Length: 150
Image (cartoon, rainbow, N blue to C red; front, top):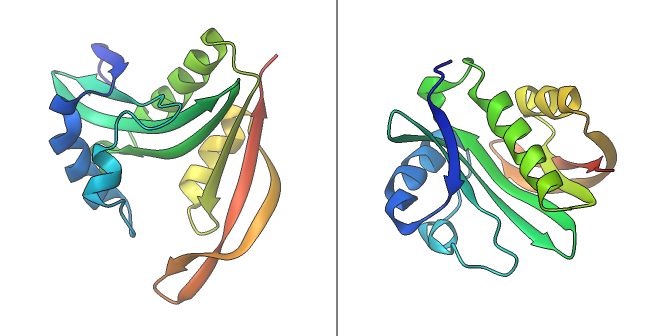
């Protein structure tokens, strides 16, 4: 992993790179209109920049100290290099610095790499939404996870 990494608020100039990563990284990517909605209620969206290129991003919503991680991804060509861990840890640090009390997310049950990353970071499974996500074989559960900040 390179040492010249920075986390900056998502801006319009990042959208094209974010859309490209979104399409490559997710089996069911967000629409371009969702990606472009950078000023949504409680917007807490950031990009990870390496060598002036967007390598990863997260979309989150901060509503009265409860943060929901809506979307997170690292360019597939950069996965396995520690960028996901750096991005998630930076996200948690940013939530703490903004006095959030908790973080919530949901993840596809088949996304073992993400589940392991979240578990390693201190998230706990709290519930499931049965048959929530579309999948190649029908539907799959969403695992709801939380992280308490004190």
